[in-house]
Length: 315
Figure 1 (cartoon, rainbow, N blue to C red):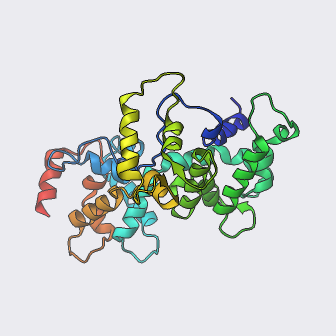
Figure 2: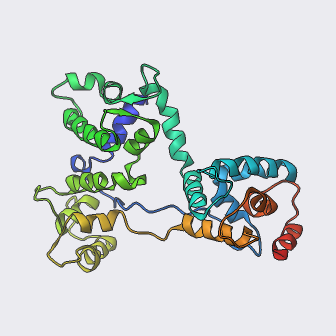
Figure 3: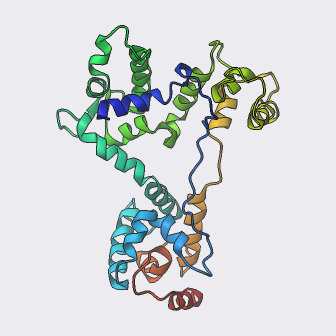
C-alpha cells in the first residue's frame, strides 16, 4: 500500500455512512492508560518510568548506568521547563507526560511529513495535501469503488481549515498533527463531533436517533435476533446517551458520548511526581530535586531497587 492509498484509507475510516458494519464499531475516544504496569511504588517505579517517558523510551534507560541516566534526565528536565525559569511546575510536567504518551502520533506525522512537504519549506499547504492524497482520483467522475472522492476532499478541506489556526491554508507540523489526529486537540473536538454526526445521521435532520445509533454499529443482515451487546446498546442510548429523553442525540449529547471527560491520568501522575520529589515543599521542582530522585523518574541498569526504596523513604 503506497502513501496515497494509506491516506485514503485514513479518510475512508471516518466515512462509515458508506459501508455497513457487521460488528460493533467503537467511536468513543478514551485517554489511554499511562502504563500497563501496576502503580505501586512500594514494589517498583516501573509505572512512573513508563508514564514519564513512554514505555519504549523507558526501556532505553534500563540499559544505562545511574550516572548516564541522571545526565539524560537532566537534559529532559531542560525541555520540560517550558518557560525556562529554572523550575518544573505540575502543569509543565503534565504537558510533558501527555506529549510522551502521544509519541506514536508525532512519529506517525514525522514519517509522513516529507511526502507532503513537496516544496521542502517546512510547511504543508492544503494544495500539497490535496494533490498527494487525491491526485488523479479527482479526474474520475465515476470511480469503481463507489466512493465520492470530491465529497471526501471537501470534508478534508473543512478539517484542514479548522486545524489551520491562522487561516492561511498552510499547516505547521503541530497544525498538521491536529488535522490528522483531531481527537487529540481540544480546539478540534467540534469537528470530530460534526464528522461523527454526519456519518451516523442518515436522514440528515441534525440528530442521531436510536435506529441510526444502532445502525452505525450493527447490521442485521437478515438476522431477526440481535446479539446481547446490541440490546445493551439500546438500553445505553435510552438511559445514558439521550440525556433529555427526546429520543435522539443532539451535538452536546453526541460529544458527551464520543469524547467523555475521562479521569486525567497525566494530571494525577504529575501531581504524584511533584509530591514525591518536592523536598522543600514549594509546589515546584528544581532540576536538582528531580535528579536526586532520578530512580522515581527513570530506570538504570545498575540501580538496585532495594537501595532506591531506602532513598525514597528517606525523603
